[in-house]
Image (cartoon, rainbow, N blue to C red; front, side, top):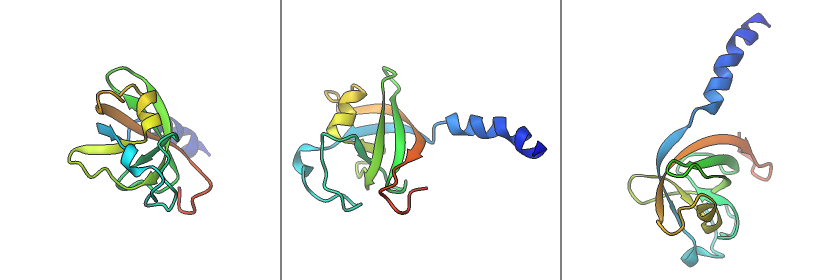
Length: 122
């Protein structure tokens, strides 16, 4: 118990640290209704995203470093495939963080949860 109390501040600090910082882009118009890597149909009006390694169903808080706006997205696809990008957002998610017009923004990613509809999300 004592060890847990000593480790708790460290665990809390780690949970707040970004897992990744880099460029985000968004995708949508040509992919509407097509299957994502998770098997779900892509719907640009949902807050979803593509990430190269996070398990499907992972909930990620995305923060635009330029304006501070945030959005929570569910990982349901793989990508991005453009060099130097860390995440591809749906159109709705891109609008929420204020990057729709620019197309690309510097973001910070934090894992904040998991959706139960995916089996391997941890």
